[in-house]
Length: 161
Image 1 (cartoon, one colour):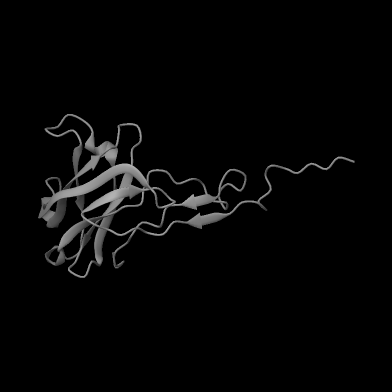
Image 2 (cartoon, rainbow, N blue to C red; image 1 turned 90 degrees about the vertical axis):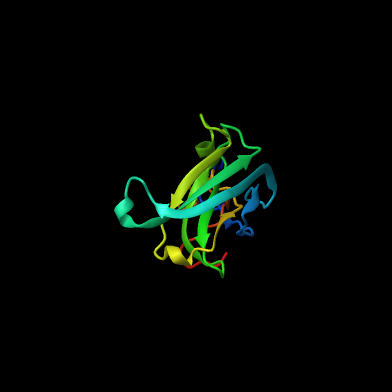
């Protein structure tokens, strides 16, 4: 008698989540094992101003960023957050290195906007170093091919960075 096991069995699938790295205005982008990927992401500047497409909604946080060491194909991604003076997130979004490629004065530089409820409380814009560009399927979604280490959950309003 020959016993065969189906490749679809979930008995061997495990998920783990990486620890969130230390946020900063300039960070080394980290893989899910916490190792640097050779890419640095930095917030170059930020300011409060109305978004040109929806000026009636009031001030938003307009920030510029730079990815050094990234190429057009790796598309590294980190979370950017506007924080108050206690480093509590007021609004966050993921920014990709591919947003920084293209015809510009500095082709490694990009810009984006953060929506916050209380713009007057913004003290800084910080980047979370964990690479969010690739997250494999979870065991729950795909028991055969899923599992492994996943990036930490993206920060949300109220998280302390």
